[in-house]
Length: 96
Image 1: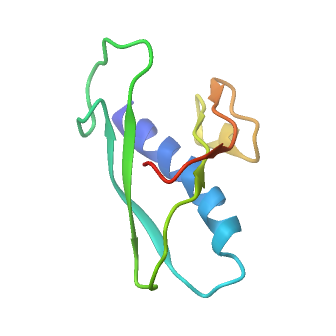
Image 2: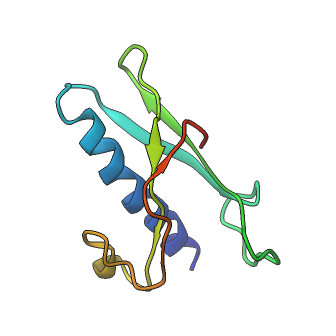
Image 3: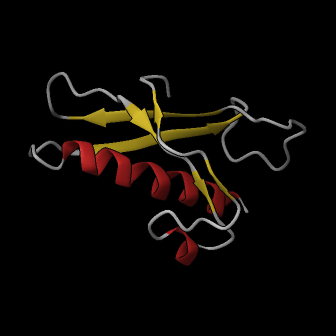
């Protein structure tokens, strides 16, 4: 489940970043994924866990303006917006 959590966050955030940066030639990566301030937690006792991530880019002035978190039972179910467990919808926010 640890790998799936990490994969889900990467898969969910990458398309939103890609669409924003599509017109530019800037590479952006997502790293330091956390849930309740922990890396790869084994269990969370929280109804609304806090998710976190950091962006890294070689481009100047690159920042997050929105995000969307998708949660699915498998990698295949993360295509488009067909996540079978949860979809936050697009959230306009610079907070990560």
